[in-house]
Image (cartoon, rainbow, N blue to C red; front, side):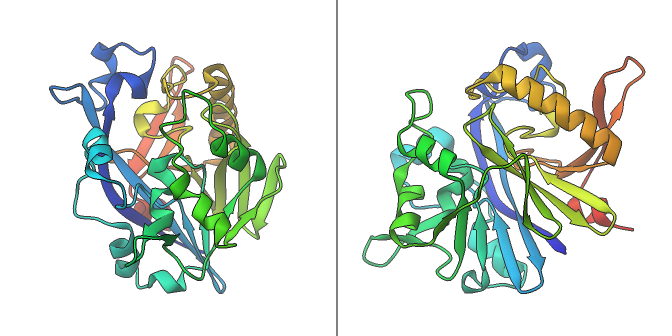
Length: 284
């Protein structure tokens, strides 16, 4: 099992929305905002190579949206999805699977591109794209709070192209040997967290349960979450599992830190232990 970080650039979101009920006097130390209260966030994806499978977890925002949309989120940076995949030694045609943790635009936007005729087509033409039926239905008929995050052009073309398959929802389903999936419901319906074994280590792709190292502590929950009290429970469960099993948490949105491990503080709280790159985390 080989893991490679795939960087797709940065974007900006309101700091208050990202940290919920936590006062600005506290969260601004974790991610300093600009004059518009916007913080910089990464759109970090993960490439998993195992056997003849080359699996991309999440795809970032992509570049097909118009200027008005982009002006709200300020995508920036030199890294791109396809460019980073090529830097990893692969072409888009070699990706066999795309695993979407959920269909919010900053996680699945790069799954679909516009062709030379302006049609929406899969970015990875030979890949199977994976979601689950509960999440697809939730995204296809969104509630008012999430409607702006679920853009049908990011996922409906995958189904139209017969490229989309569904994972059965179980407590801890095996997607592939060494690659399991945990379903969580606080942020959005049936978000999927990959849990990947690499030798004697386990990497958990945190998606939007722990979007950054700044979200490790329990009260640090985004205002975007549909069920914040459920998020609280899910964080508590992962906290305990991470301590017991020495999980490496992989952050999709942390602008600086790729990964971290956890520890219990002298006061009994579960907090950041070590922040590191993925390469450092997997080193013997």
